[in-house]
Image (cartoon, rainbow, N blue to C red; front, side, top):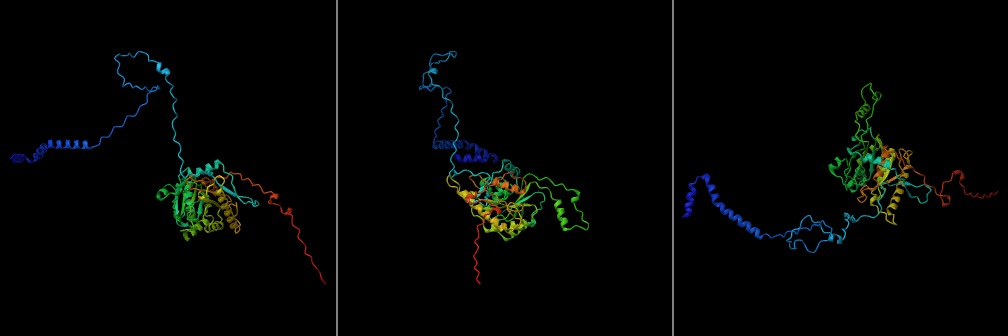
Length: 465
C-alpha cells in the first residue's frame, strides 16, 4: 500500500523534476554505501610500518651521555639564562677529530682490458740498408707536434662534407680548385672505417655509421658485408678554398664558333669555389662481391683525373698482399700515380707483452713483403720509382682505426700521409742515414776500383806437332 502511494506521488510530479526527486531520495543510501565500502577496504589493507627517523649528528664535539634529556625529570627550579656555562665537562672531554677527506670512487678494473702498452699515435716504418744482413724494418722518426696539429686541424676543424656519389667516372664533378686523394683496397679492408676515423670518429664508432644519418654527418657508410661501397664517393675536408682570380687573357675568344674543348673550359670557369681544402675519395673495393665495371671506372679515374695527387693503397695487416693488391699496384704503376701504403687492422694482430713482441715481428714481416712487391713492380717502369714524384713512398704507415681498446691508433699518421701527398703540409722530419755495416762483419760498400779480384787460373795449353 505504501509503495503504491509513492508511485502515485511520483507520477504526479512533472517529468523534468522526477529525476531530481529520485536522486534526493536515494542520496542518503548512496552515502551510507560509500562509507561502508571505504571502511571495508581500509580494514583489509595491510598497515605499513613507518620508517624510523634518521639519527641527526649533534653539533657539540663531546660524546653523548648515557642519560637522555627526555628521561630525566624536569627540575622545579628555574635557571636564568645569564649564568655562564660550566667548563668542567669541556676540559675533560677528548678533542674533536679532524674532518675526514671526501671519499673518491676507486676506478673499477675493466674486464678483459689489456695491460699491454698503448701504441704511439704515429707508427711508420722505413726499409733498412741493402747491406744489412738482418734486413728488418726500421721505425721512422716521429713527426713534430706542429705538423700533427696542422693535419688534425685540416681534418677536424670543420665538419666533413659528403660531396657526390658517382657510379661512373663521367659523373664525377669537375674539380680545378683543390687536390684529390683516393683510397684503394680490397673489399672489407677498412676504407670507409679509416675515412670515418680521419673525420674524427673514435674507436669502434668509426665502423658503425649507417644510413642517411651518416651521410648528413659527412661520414662514409660502413658494413660488415664485403662490397657495400659500389660508387665513387667524394668527401670534402678542411676550411674553404679561396677563389681563383682570372685575368682577361685567360678567357679565349673563339673565331669560328664554339668547340667541345671551349665548352669544357667554359664549364670550368663557371665552377664555384668549394667549401673545403681537398677531396678524399672512397673507391669501391676489389675482390669479394665486386664487379668488373667498378675496375674499369677506377682505371679511368686513375688515368684521366688531373686533380689527383696520389692514391693510398690499404693492405690488410693480417691477410697480407693478395692478387687484387698486385693488380691495383699494376694500375697505379701504369697510370703513374704516386702511391702510399697503409696497413689496416693492425689491432687484430697479437699484442706485444713483456718478453714477447709478437705484433712487432708480424708488422716487420709484413713490411718486408710489401717492399719486395713494390720493387718487383718497379722493374717494369722508368718513372714509377721509389721516392719519385710519381712513384711510390718507401714509408709504410700502420693503423688500427677500429680498435675499441685504444680508441684507434695510427690515425694521426694516416692524416699526415694524406696531407703530405696533397701538398697541404710539409714533412719537416730529418731522416738520418742508418749506419752501414762494418766490413769486418761481412758488409759495407766498396768502390769499383777498390775491389780485390780473385786471381783467375790460366789454363795450360799443350801444343803438339
